[in-house]
Each structure stands twice: as C-alpha cells, then as structure tokens.
Image (tube, rainbow, N blue to C red; front, side, top):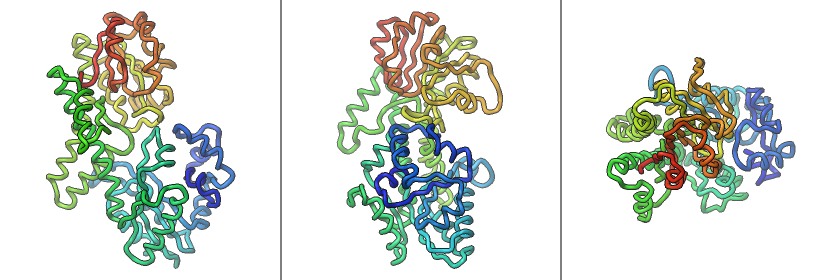
Length: 436
C-alpha cells in the first residue's frame, strides 16, 4: 500500500486495522515491521496520500478498491488442524464489508489463501449485501522479506486473477491500471481467479522444495566428503535448473513456505489426491529433519553432551534484513539445545529480547536462555557458536577476539555457510558448515 501511494500520488490509500497499538506504531517514527527502505517510503507518503487509521467502517465505505490483507494462519483446531488455512479472519472481513458497504466495490484478495476462497467471499457478500455490487479479484503477494521494497519497485511479475465475465474483466483492468503506473504491462500477468489463488501456494511450494532438496544433499556431502556449495554451483550451471534457492542451510522459515505447503497438502487430500499430498508433505518433513540434524550435530561434536555448556546463537530472525521470526529455524535449534540442558545465549540485531523468549519458551521461563546485546557478549565464555541467520555483521566480527574469550576447544557451527571456515580454523576454531 505504501508503494502504491508512492507511485500513484493521485490515489488516496488508507490502511485500516482494529488494533489501535498497531496503527499507532505505523503512525510513529518506529514502524512495527523492519524492512530496508520502508521507512523512507512511508515517511514520504504518510499524511499526503497514505493514511493509517482504526476507522475500519469509514475506510470500507469510502473505498473503491478494498485489499483484504489479514492473517490466514494454519488451523490449530478441528478439521484440518495443523495443515488447513484458518479463514475466520477472511470471513470476518467479508461480513464487515457486506455490512458496511453501500456502493459497488472491488475486493482484492491479498492474503495467501487456498484455492476457491474467492467463492466463499462472494457467497458471503451476495447473501448479506445491502444492494451493493462486488467484484472479487485475486492479487497474491510474491515479495521476499528483506528485499520487499526492491521487489515492489521492480517485480518479476504482478499476478491478478478475475472472473471471466464482463464485470470481472472490467474490475481486473482497474487494478491492472493501478500497477501499470510503474510496472511494465508485460510483467502484469492476468489469469482466472482460481489460477491466481493456486499460483501463490505452488510458487512457495516449488521454492521450498528446492531448499529441502539441497538440504537433503548436504547430509550426503557431509558423509562423503563432498562440498555442498560446489555441488550446488555445478548443478546450478544447468540452465534447466538454475542457481537460485540452492543454498544449503539449517532450514527454511518465514510466514509462507511451511504454512503454504501444509495448506497445499490438505487441499490435495481434500480433492482425493493422497499421493500428491504425501509428496509435498515430505518437503516439510525434510526441513524439520534438517533443523533437528543441526542441533544433534552440535551435541555430537561437543563430546555427546552440551549439559551446562554455553552455546552462543547468532541470529534469530528467519533470514537477514527482517525482524520476522515466524517458523525460524533458530526456534527449534534453541529448544533442542535447551532440551539437552545447554545454556543458550542468543543475539540478533533486530529481534527484541522478549520476542525471542516468547518464541522459544512460550509462557514458561528458563534461566538457561539469555539474550545478549551484542555478538561479543553472546560468545563470551561460550563452548560453541551457532550461526543461524545470515546477517552481514556476522561476517566481519573479530573472531580472534571471540576465540580468546571462549572455552576451549572452541567450536563454530555455520548454519548458513556465510563464514570463511578455513580462516576460522587457522585461528583455532573447530569448524562445521552445512554440507561440508
């Protein structure tokens, strides 16, 4: 919404939410989301044609286009628990729109949702409307956290799905015209509603599949003496494969990949395709295994016990340049290490301490988990370092200084393969990389 406001200054953009604290944060100097470049865009547009408000009903009444961007988490209860998407927030928004709107609206699905959700929205609107006409479009988001502003400025594609009716195509063209302010028309892909809804799930599934595939090979590399980076480089030169998303790591995280694959498996089972569901579910199982394997490797290297030993965890966000910790591999690794009675000291440059404790411990407490203010503090007196987020600052730390302050033998476990392991070995560290 901030980018639309920036690129279309004649369009008024209102972001509305019932959460007063969240809206207050968006109106403050400290935005609730860390994303490189976002502050500059918001500061330029806020108060001009970009507004943040808790007036949800007013925003609905006055809007011509309504983007629905609410959470669609994995269900934790009932039918489909653990896999299906929880659509209660989508339904709540649809009912609110039907209750408030008195003029025609274009409703745009921005949330990641299962295919055929538009049918649910249309049904609710049709049965509860006060005479207003609605057109429902699908416009899934393909941004990557940490590079979202660059992705928005120069997207690979913008996908918009609409109904194959005159009214649906007119609504679709209206949204096309908004994006065409700065996106070349050939990059704006238009499809039917169902193709658009399904494309988001499938895109994330394919990307996650590549990560799980290379991570499975990383274990084979460790067993055989091969180097997973060299293998990835070799196969990435094949134009049929390509080099992207072949970076072995401790595992993928974030708000999309696991949730969307589980949703996809549930849809496959719902439509009577259990073999297809099992295939995609294996991608998630491989990712979970990689996280467990990393923690187990630490325990094994440290003479089969980490009880009472200090492990420094560098990085907690699921990737660099974001403060998002959803499904972060660090959560599982920290829990596994605490389960082995280790003392875990975590440092992340953007994730608040209370969020780290909440993600790892929930509502319980454990004095063995501490949060440091710097990488050097986290590593002081540690037996081992585990790098779990690829923050650039971890590449330039003074590892000689860190080594001098650690318990010997001192170990480094690079869960993102970003460090110069040969140089660390020369300092005196016992080094372990993924797939090396």
